[in-house]
Image (cartoon, rainbow, N blue to C red):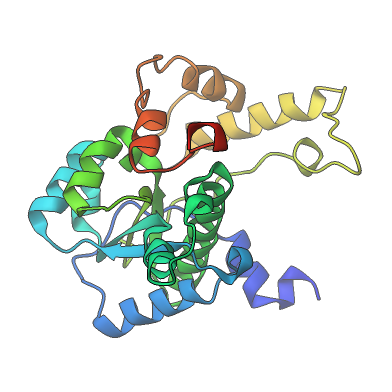
Length: 255
C-alpha cells in the first residue's frame, strides 16, 4: 500500500513540531486517550518501565518555561513529562523480598529510556490523529535536578522528555529530512563516500529556512551540527551525576 492511500503513513510523513497553540485546553477524555495510547506502545520485557506526569500547576509550568527557555509551552493545551521509572518495579521487588540490584543497572536504565521514548512517540501519533499538534521537549534536561525536585521524583526515576500538546495556531512548513542514503545502510554502517547528497541536502535545508513563513534564517544542516558542538562543555554537564544520584547506572563492582 502506497503512502498516498495509507492514512497512517500520510500522517507520519506530515509530522510538524507545533509551538504556537490556540487558547483551548485538552479535555479529560483527550488526556485519557493519549495516556491509553502511550500504554499500548511496545515495552521492553513488558516491564512498562516509565510513568507520565501531567503538569497542571501554573507555578510548576512557569518553572518549566524557565528551565527550557520556551515560554510558549505555557500556552499549550496540556503538558506531559515522560519519566524513566524503575521505582514502581522496585516496590514489587521489595514486597516479594527479591534482590532489586538489576533495577539499578545501566541495562535497566536504558530499558526505561526506551519504554518512555516509544510511549512518547505513541502520544505524538495519537495527538496528531486527533487534530492536535505537539512538540517533544528534551530541553527539560537543561536542569534535571530542578525538574526532579519540582516533580518530587523518588529514587530510580528520571525525567526524560516534556510534551507540549494543544490545538495548532499555525501550520509550519514541512522540514525536509536527510536523504535515506545518509541514514539507512545494509548489513554494515557505511556513510556514502560521495558527499554530493549531503551538499544537496544542505542547499535544500538552506532554501527551506530562508523561505519559511516564520523564524527564517541562513542555515544549513552542516552548519547546524557545528553550531550544536559550540554550546559549551558545561551545558547539562550534571546529567550523569544526577542520573546516578537517582540510583541508576550502578555496576556490580560498586554494589
